[in-house]
Length: 386
Image 1: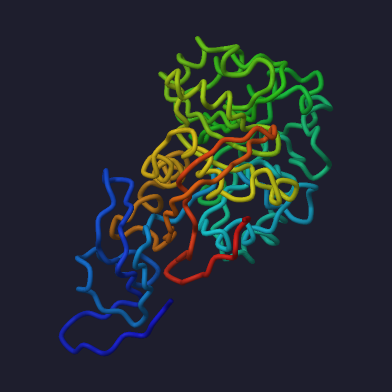
Image 2: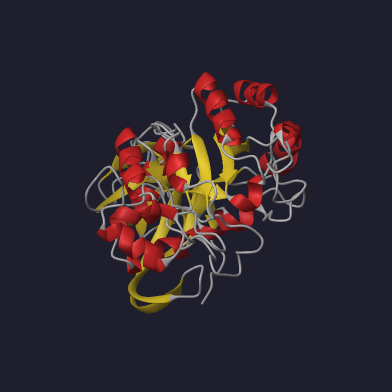
């Protein structure tokens, strides 16, 4: 797909030109034809098709060229945790240029995570640091042993020392995680987050605590992941508080996972005006082979529920970058931003998709990643599920 260009004496030659595609910039309402020039790992110029020259050319004919997809909720601390999947397996090899690990590690293990996950990966790997000092290293009940599970001072120090890497705090607020801890871990997470000016991502699931009580503690920029699960309670057990939270600027995230995307809940939510702000996978070693598979497959599921390609791309690019506080760097095709791109083939034809509970829905559109460009370098995408 990549070709080497010829010398042109009077025109600038860029490191890479992505040419012939439709530019799916989420800042625009519709894709438009154009070429993208990349220089020194950044987007240098957008120009009419066929007008740019590059040392290397990536042919995007017939494809959508989107900002690099961002998966806001993953688990990539392999092999230290029972859930960890290799970052590049669910990252660039699936057309995703940025993955955010959602609480696999806490303050105790952040240095190890950086050395053994972040640095070796081609994919950009960021963190939601678990409010539990242990993260998931000792198993899935990281907040069930009392106040000693949380070290606010160490968590705050990690965020202050690594602001580019740690984008916020993760806290899992469901009965299987908390034991008798109640709302105390969330209150700890909010105290630290407010001191350092970063958001909190809250995992919700089986009650207690009641979702409404969780929502009442959240503010602008905070994220509720697994917002469309099909477990008892949930969004439609706390509808009044959910509407008030969204009005305050709380964001709803899909966080598909093994048990947290229900087509029935999502259909009801969309009909009631609860639109996801971000679409993420909660991909990990136990959901990679199904029901999640990939971020692209998760986008397809929202397409099958009536969202448009433009909407789902925005959720996994522009909106995700906004949540991370990285709108100047990621999520658009704006010149000067990182040269992270995802090339997508929009396929038409019947497809059957499965949610976390085994329910199916039929769709007629799929977004198939063909290649990723990460920091200006081309990476082919591995074959996905049939």
